[in-house]
Image 1 (cartoon, rainbow, N blue to C red):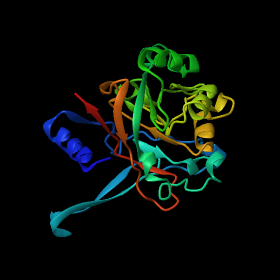
Image 2 (cartoon, rainbow, N blue to C red; image 1 turned 120 degrees about the horizontal axis):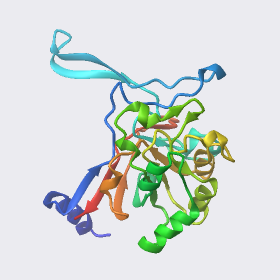
Image 3 (cartoon, rainbow, N blue to C red; image 1 turned 30 degrees about the vertical axis):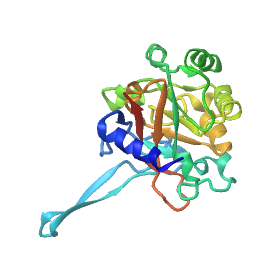
Amino acid sequence: MSESTLADLIQGIAAGGIKIIDLTATLEPSTPTLQLPTDMGWGVSWPFHIEEISRYDDKGPFWYWNNFKCGEHTGTHFDAPIHWVSGKDHENHSTDTLPTDRFIGQASVIDASAESAANPNFLLSIDFIKAWEAKHGKIEPKSWVLFRTDWSKKESNEEYMNMKDDGPHTPGWEPSTVKFLVEERDVIGVGVETVGTDAGKAPEQDPMFPCHNIMHGANRCGLAGLTNLDKLPPKGAIIIAPPLKIKEGSGSPTRVLALVTG
């Protein structure tokens, strides 16, 4: 690659030929977070909390800043392989040790928004992906597969979480699909618009939480809580999604950007 390649990229952004699409939800106290049953004695992920330190006042006359706290997997966030027990024994599997080339890649955006609107428990199958590939081309190795459901357009947290008496109902993956993406398409990872990378009914699948189990078991990554996937083409976008460099971090809130032409 020559220096002109990077210069062309910057000139393309400045001239508007390359657009930057923000795929990130704004972090605020109302941001929905995934909570596990407390009756099991499991730990609780902090919701996003922000507290002003000073704002040009007696606590700091010339500066404005805040303290904040939240769980690593809050809002639009990155899942590192160490996040799941199946990925715990890999090397270079946390946010501070993952190779940085995992944070940038091509995107294949698979639109199942109509199917997800008709069935909140919709699961993406291998056949669905192969039909998409027949139209748009094969998923490239070392790319991100983004599962468009338009779930991020839900108007309230209640609709977004879609919690019923029998648990949450949100779209996800058939276990065989995740294995296919890892073994036959060699992806970096997958991204979704829902609160986590698995379906709401993932505890009932075999294996349980197949996206977490299989994807992280293969030392691959995940992105959750994405927005604006409807603004991306099926192919051609470049995803930039570096997590915070937390020592032995299992993930972090992330500003996910997409570069698109046109």
